[in-house]
Length: 434
Image (cartoon, rainbow, N blue to C red; front, side, top):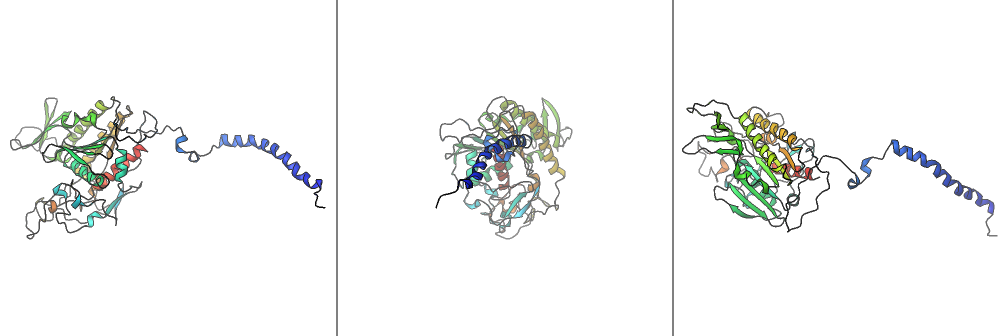
């Protein structure tokens, strides 16, 4: 009563004895299955995979304070391509608007402060660029500051480089306050800021040709360019740069005489000088080649890493004469297909991209050198609404509309479309690091 019959336990006992033998029999089958059909890599943590993916990472400059963030582990002597075609996309309406307010950012140049100058329409502030091949996140100032911790960033070029720099400074200032510690007093052409929160220096160097040149003056109504030599006003400080953003183009449209190794190659629009007219597209490409070659030769073998970004040509949107009312009257972006990238704008961009691609091939010899195009020409072409126009001056129509009024259809309102340049810049930096 209450006792269990021994015969009822025999089947369970038999199964317990059989189970180990069944497992031993299945083990060879499992090993064969894993040999021919290995588990997918996605099942393993990323830091346990011994990958040979091409990648190069900027290292922080040596500094004692504050401490740098831990570097990402990557293979040495490798190279990565930025896996997104930022040129292929469209402008979409966006309700959130800009990250900062132009009326309370002290870095904005007076001529680009469209809001404080009384521009009545605000629609140009509510558009975002949507690439078709990837997501372009909103600008994250803290992420940018963290990636640049203990490093020096330099913008080199003409007023478009300055326009992009001032956009970046306004966005970064929403997270950390910079201190201006150097200026030469010459229309803010050379300035340096320091972000003490992350030990970052940000600089702007005026160099409208990148190569050695003499700008036109009252005594000489044309520029003189020396295409075999880089401009030492910025290149002499190259050893202190961890990342450099190059941006030029519009000064090449001005009258100029071109020199190469003590010879005059020709000129652009120089009547009366007895030089051969050769235009400026090939000259622009040659200057870009000289610049990238100088960076590669000086920094490639040095062992100290540098990232080089070339912001491509940004088209102007003049309709008619520059000093007439309505020179850039558009109030919204072009639709896809409404405006084609062609003519001078396409030629200037192509001259840059061709030299960047050639320099990237050459840079693959060096693990410490990265080059990339920040290709904004097409997406800038689609934004005729983002320029100051007559609002380069405060309240230009306060006394009524006059027949003649100065217009800026080249530079960009701040905030405005050029903020997107820096969103792409940060996205490139994150892809480099990641």
